[in-house]
Length: 434
Image: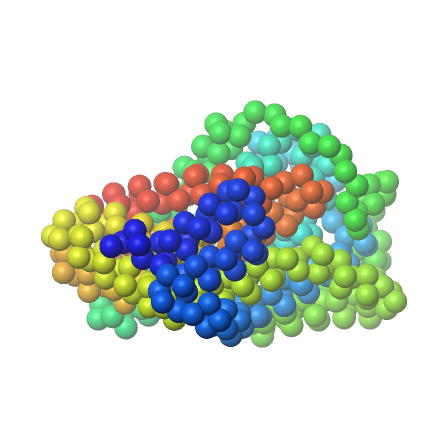
């Protein structure tokens, strides 16, 4: 029975624990053990599987710690404060303009300048005081950031979007359906409309009312610095940030980019060598928890795969579907939501679900374009709202710099409601029409 599948049970446990404000890291660890035990795996084996699988996100975790150190370094130079003041002049006290501008900048992080969440700990903490002044509800900003982190890779075949759409293409081909990247791009605009709708509802309706926050001093940000003139130190900080970008693009390694950027800051004198310990300590404080959560999330995903419960869940769904395309579409997307909520990665979910969805879609009479849409949306579902996803962890890292933003209730729940529901609706409608 589907409800007693270890994946369903463990993800339900994780969601309940998180909503009860249990630590996210502990919630994932407990859920992984629950998944193992429910599938008949000894607790010791479940834990060893989790630990051995943690290496799946090792590069990501190291990237976040180094990027956190880079963010602290850039903040110490005052460059982020200058940027925040310039943004303040642009928005001219209009809070909706600021929120939409943040969403716009976030979109660039996926394609034009593909640094993913790296910009968040550098830019957002410096904007918190302005947000407080405008009484902006940070849940709206969390939705804006997650929108920018997700929508471009779903719909635009550039940067991370090209990687995502090529994975869909390759998995479709591997499972017997001839597909091109253009075919993927031609249908993935449909869920993007749902994402846009979700953003507009969050910004203009759900979280439009003012919300008060305290002005709290943030480490590394000098609020008394008023000189907006770019000095040598600021230009060196900008050079360091540019170095991180170019090294990442050239080598494909975000950790190497972060390391090279820090070295550039030291060599140019923007940061003194004796400050290295403070920078790394600050990087660990800012992004270390995210890094460890990502490590444990990779281990959790490894436990789910090792139990065979994901395949069993999908197989159970195929038995329920019958010949109904509508029921098939709904259940396939719901399974995608559950799997991605657990694994925390849209990119990592695609190979798992495509292996079953392709033959199932063909047997139900779905067109190749409809199957592409189902696979793509099922992979994207759950990334917004998952406690272990970088699409939620990243926004929280920036918005909680002054300890006034809750990861679950202020990031995960709002993004889950405003993006997963539209994705489900547009995915179902689109698959029935294509």
